[in-house]
Length: 226
Image (tube, rainbow, N blue to C red):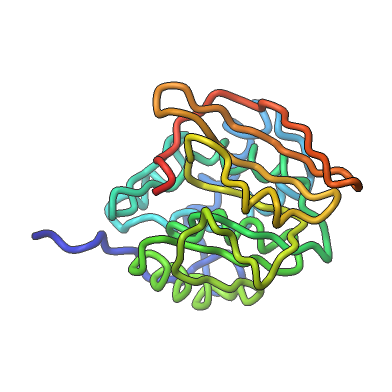
């Protein structure tokens, strides 16, 4: 049986760890795939330029890391295409001092993006191997304000709730009630939801009275939330 995909060594990361030969590809990714498609938040654009996506994909896919496409990361999971990561992050409106919950750590790329924009990210991953590898990768790349654990993301992380942001990287057919409950007033839940043939990316905002409103941001296709 083949093993999990090998990931590139974590050096040359663009954070002072050495030269980054793929920096021009990352700049082009932001200009052509993200800004050109309407993402305008300066913080989101900045971190999409800074975080080395090629260090979050398997080594065999490294030279595809800045293409406008999702890529497999093993265990039947994928890393979302860069535009979707940027869109979800912009919809979440992350800010200094905020606390975020991520459901579906995967390889840790979205975790890293969020971590550069908020005070702390708590991330839950169902697949134990992915959770362990992502935690090690994030630590080695210097993302210190992240806590990863293995668990059922549908239940959120009640011990650390409430959250300013909840962001899900997998699609349940219906939005788990626990994720809405764990939003603080003013909080934003960004989640794909629906059957595999008809998923929508939702933005759910909780007001100060605890009521929510739901906006549909885009038609999407994500791996199902298991």
